[in-house]
Image 1 (cartoon, rainbow over the protein chains, first blue to last red):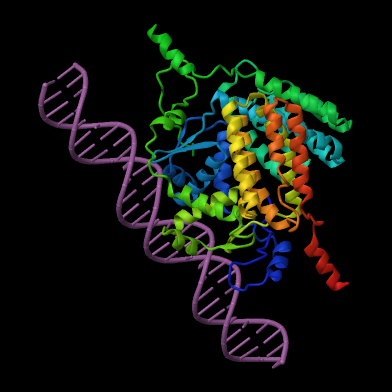
Image 2 (image 1 turned 180 degrees about the horizontal axis):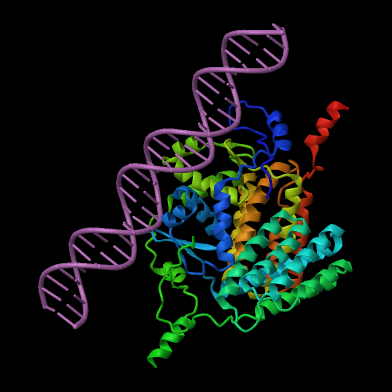
Length: 254
Length: 254
DNA sequence: TTCGGACATTTTGTATCCAATCTACCGATT
DNA sequence: AATCGGTAGATTGGATACAAAATGTCCGAA
């Protein structure tokens, strides 16, 4: 997150000059670190959704969540608004917030966007990653392997997403990193919805192959592997053509 | 404490596919007749910022805005929260909301992201655009030319952004289209902040060249022109090296 | 028995109110 | 005279209270 270290340079109409003092005192103090309970609630709900403890379609009642977190509805509403903005929950007027159920079209769009963005990100990582970055990635892989051994599907999905997020962070473009965070969250929902149960969600460890290419400073190979990896993930899903619900109904009456 | 798990509505479809009824059935039958005054306020403020009637750094007091729009602070706060999420305004704890002042680094990131995304979008447009789409683009160009003739810089910036937005919409990926909307807004702020005054912000009409390439169904040329166009825009800015404030301070103590 | 309508309950949406925090001004002290 | 400390004003952050809307139920009539 960008710290709000951008001080107002010009003020509204009254002749307030740029407040340099605020600019300086704000930089080292970083006192914007207010834990911001709404951020916490946002993270908690998001985590629950990403680990699919809250499956798509679940109604997220404000009062109930407020009681769970021991705060007022105000905080919950703000958190839900942010989740709505990220397309993780959909808000229906006067009816409430629900965990989103991306359509197959939206799922395809998510993968389209990822195939566009992530090869570029990993190219930059392959060019610019430091030894510490690579070490961090290797450390993360260990967690993934452990989760895979334990057959902990929730952790596998979550950690796999985190891996891609780490790459995005290393790439160094904060805007794209944030976009990737949204795409990752949506991908989690898509996997939960459309994963063919028998197929492992993130096959074997193509991730370690990606790290190898990064370590070899081979951007082209890394990008190619990334595309291949994303294709594998997408093809492990059952993205049936849209409008199936209607077809099912028609079949029932046939 | 286990979060509430309400299986929402078991639709009649036997396939127990994800319940997108909540999402879709909302579209045609939605009685959200309320234009959602918070959306309106959001649009109004955003428009004012994009037309740089509210320059970067401007303090956006809640009470004042509430008085302007004749609503309560609640609505304004929600609108500001959404703008904050889009990085158009930055929120400083206990101090209020300010129109964002993107740093030069952030400006470069924005253009990086655009160079990554937009060539792909225009490729798709060149492949799939209908005659109606192309007509819409040509119509838009006329507006741009008119604004350029009238030397109405605000409209030029705004309309130039809209052009790219139209392309993103035609491309057909809603996620990327939304991302482009955010990038466009940020670009507007960047142009306002760093535009070299003598250079026209969006040079001549490279836009019509883009449309020509689209009409010729030449994705490669369209993409190349788009990159060139983005480079022109970026290079027409004075992106001075970062850390100027810190350097100034250091100079003071030297 | 089933369909229709009205009522009651629950939940969301909005405004108002109170507390916490910051800015600015002013006075006191060295 | 300048700087530091304190107090007052203003503004944001959060909670509660109130109004509007929707869902679900119950009763009545055909």
